[in-house]
Length: 432
Ligand code: LLP
Image (cartoon, rainbow, N blue to C red; front, side, top):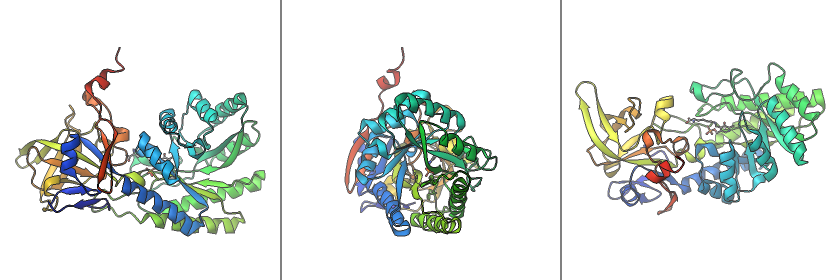
C-alpha cells in the first residue's frame, strides 16, 4: 500500500508520511484528519512540467484541476511552482484570487456558469474561459461587451472518445452534458459564432475525456481528433487556432491491482500524436495545456481515523467502524472506489484480516470499502486510508452535521495545519 514516495514505515513500525509519524499526527491534531504531502504534490507537478519540456520542447503548461483538492494553500503552492490552475466555479475562483493567484494563469471551466461568475471572471481578467455551449457563448459575449473587453476563450469539444472508466466520470463521448459535439457540426458552428462575435476571441480548443483512466491510447487518440478539428477549422474558416487543452484524467494506483502508466509517458504519447497529426495537416504545433487533478494530489493524501467497535458477523463479514466515513470520503458510496488501509501502529505487519470499513453516518452504504485487507484491528487503533488526496476533502459534506475534518500539510518531516477543522458553531453559523 506504500504506492506514493511520501509514505514509509518508520523504525517504530508506524506508517509515516513525509517522515512524519502518523500516530503523532493523529495525537497532535485529532481524528478524522486529512494529511497531504507537499513534497509529493510538488514532485508530481514537476513530473508533468518536465515531461512537457522533454517531449514537447516546453511548449505547454500544467493547469492543476483544483476541484480535486481546493483550499487556499494549494493555490499558493501552484503559484510558487509556476503552474496554472483550472477552476470550475465562482467559489474555486474566489479561493484562488484570495491568495493572489495570478488571474492570467486561471482556466475557468463549467457547463453552466452563471452570469455573475462570468462577470467576475471577466472583471479580474481570468486567462481563458473554457466555454461549454452556445448559451454560454451568447452570455459571455454580452458580459464582455458591457465590460468593454475582448475575452480570450477556448471551447470545450466532445471528441467522441469513450474511455474505459466509471460511467459517472466519462465525459468525452457524445452522450455527455459537457461541451460541443464534433459529429453534429455543433463545434464548427460555435467557431463561426465566435468569429462573428464582438467580445470574444477564440484561442483554442479543449477536451477532457474522463477521469481515472489507465490506458494512454484514448488520450493520444483524443489529441489526434482535436488536431484534426483544428485543421478543419483552418480549412473551413481560415482561423488558425494556437492552443490545445487536453484536460486531465490520468489514473493513479489506489490498490495493488491498479497499474497506471508513468506520468511522463502520457506526454510522450500525446506529443507524438500531436506532432504526427500536425505534420499530416501541415499545421504549426499548438501550445498544449494539461489539466491533471487526481494524479497531482491523489497519492499525496491519506486520511487518519480512530477505530471504534469491531463488529464480527460470523460467516458474513467484520465491520470496523471509523470516526469518519462517507461525509469525508463519499467515493465508495458514489463510485465503489477502491482504497487501501492499514493499522498505522502496525503498518509493517501482514494485512491478513479482511474488514469492511464503515463510517458513522445513518446509512448502510456509508462505507470506505468492503473486504479490505488490514492488520488485525482493535478498538482505538489509528486507521490510515491511503490515496485520499483527490476528491475527498473537496467532496466532503456535513451529512448528519458532522464537522469537516482539518487538513494538515507535511513537508520533509515538518507539518502544518492548512485548513482548520469545523467546529459545531461553524455548523450552525449560517442558520437563522
Ligand atoms: N479538467 C476538467 C475539465 C475536468 O472536468 C476534470 C475533472 C479535470 C480536468 C481533472 O481530472 P483528473 O485529472 O482529476 O481526473 N469526483 C470524481 C472525479 C470527477 C472528475 C471531474 N473532472 C472522482 O472522485 O473520481
